[in-house]
Image (tube, rainbow, N blue to C red):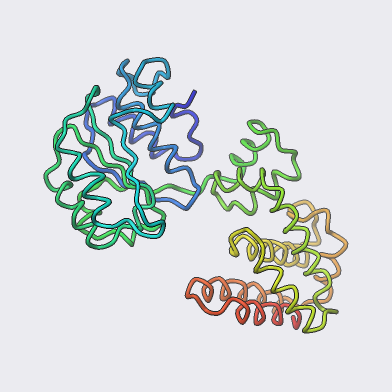
Length: 329
């Protein structure tokens, strides 16, 4: 039964919404800004349910007709704005989903709530169309913009909304959640927590992903033997990486965590704080083979590879430069 207690590591947002509900001072528009898969939709759902709850508490009761409608996804006054093109929210999507609909009063509730996920995909024309509603909203309208890129929203949009920034969830909170709530074993919880980097949703997805486990194993195998590999073998490995069905940043993060372990072990000779504890034999070998400067060069090359891929530089060229840098250092 979802309520605000199910939101981990975002106390400042929970407190803001609970105070707004308790005082009745509800803004007509909010921006929830956070990484992809970090739980923005879940937070929006809880707040929308609490606003519409017939019992009038600061938490949804999960028992009234309104809460049951919301949980089933069939609440007539909680509207998820959809869009035709996957990569773009166009002006017609906003006109049809919000502007033309918001003039109609709520069917059965005190509020009419619009949830626009991936709001960063709105075109400038779509944002300007939404601005008209944000400037003169009906008293019953609440618009929730969920975004992973606040800077993509016009300053005029941001200035008319309450902006709530999600924070990285502490590692100990994520690990405890994985172990207690979804019963992930200790060693796997450590790995998923390290790769999630404060994103609870990502940690859950990684814990459930058999493919991530397989790719992690293959990535570590590549790092173990890359110094002995021929160029043709490296090119073959690059083609295989391109076929993986995970975000390339997740793959690069596997490499980064491995080399952070190498650097940490080289500096401390301590196994206890390593993520890849089970690979200590190889981590020790690589730390002996590599100079501090070489490991720093590799970590820097990993960040440069991410930046190049974000800028749409050729994938194979980017990965070839990266893996050759790793091989040479």
